[in-house]
Amino acid sequence: MSDKILQNENLGFAIHDLARMMRRNFDHKAQDIGLTRSQWSVLVHLYRNDGVQQKMLADQMDITPITLSGLLDRLERDGWVERKVDGSDRRAKKVFLTAKVAPVLKDIQRLGKELRKELLQGISEKEFEYLMQLLLKMRSNLSSK
Image (cartoon, rainbow, N blue to C red; front, side, top):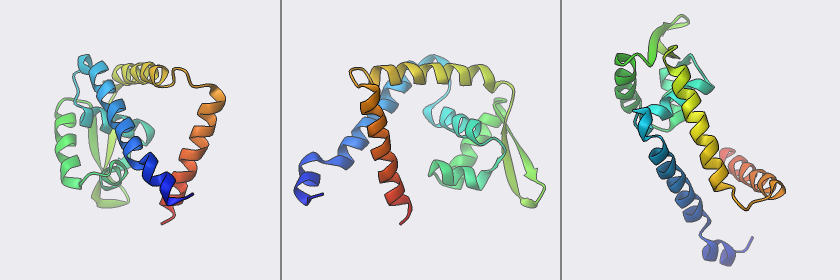
């Protein structure tokens, strides 16, 4: 791909703007849930990998361990998550969702579906599949570095 195409299209800015707009629109839809973006982000990450070590969760979320610790303190205080000592490494803690999270995750999933429907308006299934192939290939290109 030529440098001219990359300069004219500003791929990084377009991806960043799209992600920012998606977050903003989702936040607007999720106001009634009563959680901050950071908090529901933790819950969604745990939904995908419940019982993960706290350090690994911080890595997955691309935030510092101290930032995550503060989020987990509030979530644990409010009954959303619980931390337990890792049996294989007593210095580490694993983080688990509580039963309180189930209805909220359903709301988050519903709102995510609504946002995707808006986002993909006018885009065919074939176009979406091709877009996903390209994005996954780009991600793979960068993750191997």
